[in-house]
Every structure is written in structure tokens, then in C-alpha cells.
Image 1 (tube, one colour):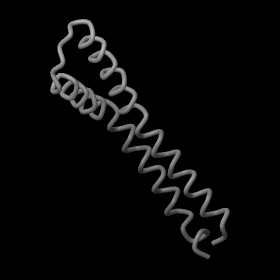
Image 2 (cartoon, one colour; image 1 turned 45 degrees about the vertical axis):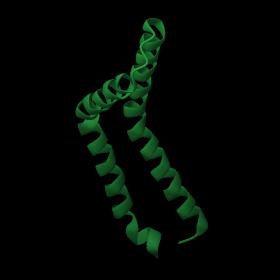
Image 3 (cartoon, helix red, strand yellow; image 1 turned 135 degrees about the vertical axis):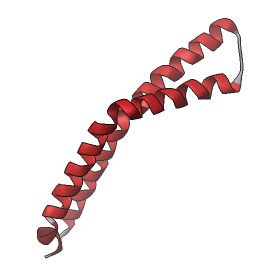
Length: 89
């Protein structure tokens, strides 16, 4: 296993992580922005008002994107394990 193989595997792992996390974090960002604008306009500074909608949005997006996330992880794991004999040797 040379250095380039390790760098390629790390790159693929980081790219897969970004693909998986992007929908969840993006939706949490949009909900957080909407709640912040709502808090700024109404001058309500309740701390739980900022966290509860984001948690619910992440859970909803996890239910929505869960099958896609699982298939992406399974594809990455299958590709990693199917090329294991090439990477070790």
C-alpha cells in the first residue's frame, strides 16, 4: 500500500462524509436562519426557540434522506471492501 492509495481512500471518505452531511446541515442552516430572523424581528430571545426547530428539521431530513444516506454508505463500504485485496497487497 503506497502513499497515493491512502490519500485517495482518505479523499473518498471525506467526500462521502460531505455528501452525507450536506442535506442535514443545509436544512439545519436554513431553519436556523429563519428562526434567527424571526427572533430578530419579534425581539424574542428564548434559547430553546433556536434549538428545537433545528433538531426537528434534522430529524425530519434524516427520515427523508435516510435511505439515500444508507445506500451511499453501503456503496462506499462495498467499494472499499471489494478493493481490499488490492489495497493491502
